[in-house]
Length: 486
Image (cartoon, rainbow, N blue to C red; front, side):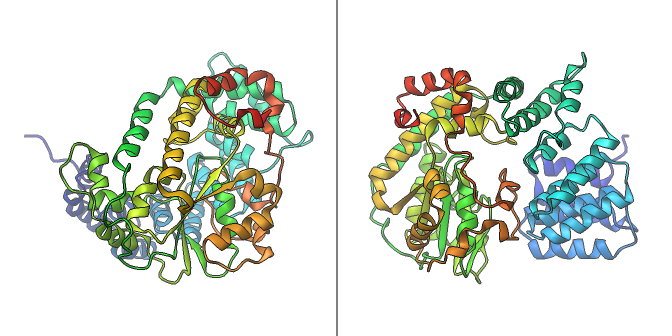
């Protein structure tokens, strides 16, 4: 007769299978068996959080911190849950404690560096990256994070070290991916554009080879969304409860959504939930169980139920205006208008070639798999453009469109226009985003610690000789606005 697996391992298996409620009693047993702070505490807190029990998850973390000292893994796991609870300072302290308990673990230093960056402690983040790399020269994520923390200079960069690593005959795909993007970024800082593009292209090709993705699936998804939100319903205009305090900032990645968020956060009473899936979760939970497909079921969701569930997830009753800054909310704009018709929706737009190249030169996580191939980028951008055109025709001026170029070239008047759309009083100090100490978890986390800069406008022109295939693919996809790009 086989021996039953330890409760923590069985809880992890159930959690991975989506059987969260079944994992809970096993996670509790794992904690009961622990005499010190252990990874089991992080596991239990994770299960509770997945079940919506935020207060109990926080209590488990508090109990764990007061327990006898544990391992680096224990504090690292607790810190990760604290991030999901929005407790960034406490998470940072536990990431630092993990490095103290296990100073020779590169991954703990990397996690600390990521936390420091989100809090704007860029020098500390660079030192933590240096430590991770000193411990493990093959910890390639740390090279990329380090490259992004500041503009590199001729006198102070890491190009030679990274090129030597990639010249080794046994350089892995992970090395090509992480170091390629890091080299591209650092060489771009030094205005060595031909060399930079070669590394961006190599890194993007490596990333694409390891993805299972069909851009046709996204094209069909966008078309289906347009179909199910083609016409108004009788309850579309019904204000179930006042929803004017909600602001949704959306747009393609690297289009200025974080910058718009930071400017609005410089105004009194404005708070942000950051990049959450609060609305999509509320929509899916309120959708009927049956229907032709998920799109039809979401379109059939009763708006009042969606609004109620969204408010419960969004929280922050103290905020005069509460921002949800998830770029992908452009998929849900029709549903947002039905459930929260008083909410402000701000769409960031950027010139097509700059927009596509900015995505191409960025390594994302699991999101945006279309961004590593010029042909797929062009097809996705065209499908996105068609969806936005549908929203314009369907909702008119309820979609507030802000051009990235206007935001960086004339931040005060453009910011004032955004504020007015949100019903907020403007003050020019809001554009001093570098003075804002709020947490940023986005790909722009380092850039928002600097004053607003304009150097990204027309950046693609420095790579003009390499981007002909992208331009032609956009033309073939009938994307408008290319002539304005030059």
